[in-house]
Length: 297
Image: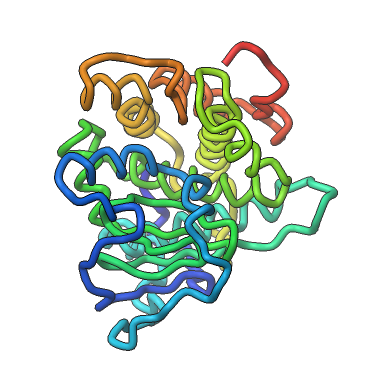
């Protein structure tokens, strides 16, 4: 899915960090190689699993790390040619969409911040690294993305190279922020594993929220009034569904262990993830994405 070239991108809630080093994050204490791959798969698309890593103190900062705004990302044309700008623009469009759509009564809407980093950085949930993959940290309400992950998604897991496959990842993570605002994100910690577990329901809901964003992005206005994205094409939808399929629990388990174990599901099967993304595409309100209200996932 392409951005409208003239759409204006607000990057005030996006930062870029570089020079953080290539050390191992806390989840990598057991070593790299196959362990690293499994860790990435477990952590894929969620900040929930990482929230238990915090020690309750302010994370250490790296004095060599450079933090800057993504000032070069000004328009949709930039988002179409630069992956960092695509992440920033998707986060901006998700922020505007959810500001209009959020109808929770527990607390007022507040935007998430997005951190685009290289190799490694610190979050309130522990160390973010390119071996962990994208995640949302509820403790600092930030989305962490190393864009090199998109290459892993494509080359190792067979996702499409289309733009919406990448944008789906960002929109899914922003969906976790919306769940945090609604107060349902913690259910994944209370019941993390199993075919119909809280963990699976939380992830499928985030997929549904990503579908809602995708369906409405073409009518969500940027700061100059021009919609963020062009009209969805059939290929765009296929791109997003390919990403959802690539990270289904059954696909991941079969690839890493050679067998499928639904009792160990944490994110849902490929078919479920695709189905809930499409459910979101047709949804008119967040309530239609309530995966806790159905026994049929």
